[in-house]
Amino acid sequence: MSLPNDTSARPASTRCAIPEHDFWFLKAIHSAVLVAVTTGTVDLNQLARAEMIRRGLDPAGDWVGRNRARELHTHHTTKEHTS
Image 1 (tube, rainbow, N blue to C red):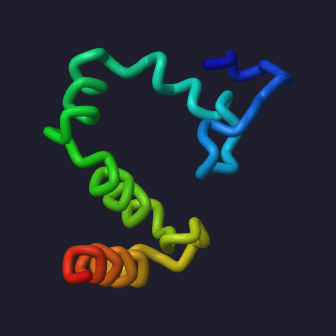
Image 2 (cartoon, one colour):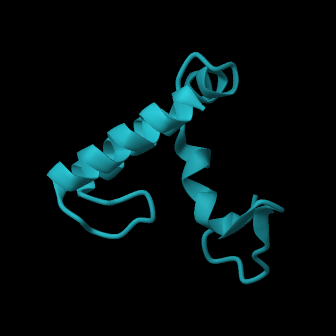
């Protein structure tokens, strides 16, 4: 993983257009948390959705307010589990 100011950034994966250097914060996460995420003990998607609701963001990252974000993310989660 590159440093935050590394100019030779490349996508973190072939499915993600976000440069690898934008994931610098992973270096600060305790190993026990990383293990819990990789083993499925912690659902990082659920935690991210909860944070997006707190910020009032829709699934695309646009501000829509907390109530609408809650509706959209709840619908998104329900849709995922029923498909």
